Image (cartoon, rainbow, N blue to C red; front, side, top):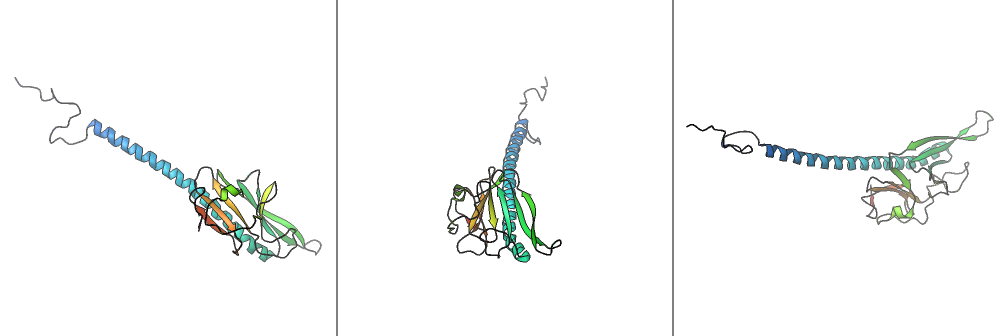
Length: 208
């Protein structure tokens, strides 16, 4: 009596010479691909958060360096103000002379407000600057009063003053979603603010 060929065949066993994948092999491949995709998503999210932080730090550094050029060009004061109540934005302000009405220079403020990416903030707290590699700063003149931090292009106050070099100071750009930090600093020996990078809190600072 002729036996049926499929009677004793194991449902997950591939016969010799038969092509294709078994169910178990297919499930294993799907699981592996899912794990790889999940890991890639985590790495991509971390990369994007770091890129947002870096972009904000580079933009702020450019704005600080541009303060001097703007002040010299307009022969007056220029500053960046960062409100401590909302350290996720800052205002770039400069004062332009207007003689259209009285013939006597009247300094009228012009400004632009820049918002940082989500979760990115700026800080002048000492703890955020921890780590080696930064030049010495005798005192942080960029640390303002109780309401805001201010970065200026000259020493002293007032509007109608001579343009001087940057006062020594520093500010850290950080994010609760990223380990890396950036520091913009004008130290005792420098002539312009420099941008530094830190891979994580407390690590060495590297000049960019």
